[in-house]
Length: 456
Image (cartoon, rainbow, N blue to C red; front, side):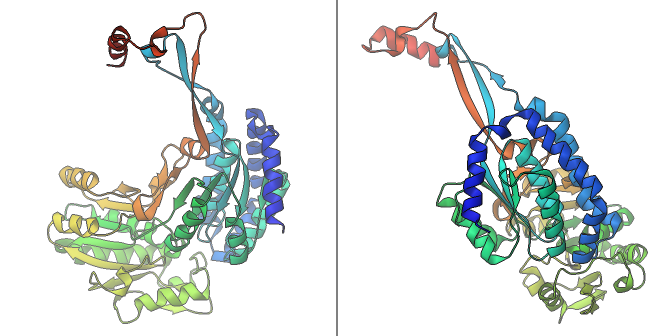
């Protein structure tokens, strides 16, 4: 594929003004929603092939969330595009001030393999709603989903409006050599640095949705039974291959044993006595990542699970006990179904442990103590999170989702998606019937006194 020619073709289409029409944007969003519904079975088949996701999990975490996002923006888009009036300073009398959102132009969306449909399509929905042209780069690690995305996009959009570039590192490199007006990247920190470096050559703005070691903190006042179920859900969803999955557990020493007993029961109830034989339990994406995650278990004290099947690329839900802060499993984002357990005596120890590390994409706090909740929410910096639950904070179009520090920059979902792919243009319209002479030379003490009166 001639990537340079594709970018040039999209720039010409954007310059034609076609994508600026709100009716055109809504038409395309509705067409995308309709085509998704028609192809839902094929999308789920692709997710089953690449990640062994069940139809239920595929709808809950991929197609359903994307359809919800389209519906939300479809409903609110006409309100978002309207100019917003702002108060005009007295010094600008007589005039009016307003801001107007405008699309950036030609955008690039690079998506990962762990939620290969949703993390490609949800940013696209925002880009189209904001009036941009877009090139999508799905992950080569999820080839079945990549192919389905290409077919879906080709059925809805002209290539000069939205196009899909499939492939691996060569195509990624070629895309990053082009000049885009905005780049949206979801993936790991290493590649995120490269994207930011390449974008800086053209001063291209970026959103980086990265990851990190997201903690789950459970104190002695928590509802342990509910916490066990909700942590098991969040940790082992998609076999732990979730950027906001609880990466490790910090639990108060006094309730650790009771909690782990409840946790093992919750996992058994969800996945059965042998999760590796559960047809709805997802697999690790490829052999490389299977070996990496398996290596993090080796030599550790396994409290639960630990088994793996290289033929099916499945690793059982695993709990590691007796973990120290410098253990290999604590040095990198796990991105797999492995939960290291660390303990604390007083909540200040847990607070300090998290603050000493890079800012995580998510943080989960289980407590019934209002003061502990207030303390941790005010002192810990993280992208987003939950109190007494996991993961669900990202499953809404009414709040933005994104990272901070090493876990990313920028956010999206709902209105935030529209704003991410829009530039807010500030305008002052002055009227001609009055032109105050104060700003024009020659200057005088009288004008200076009047200026200070206006600007104070």
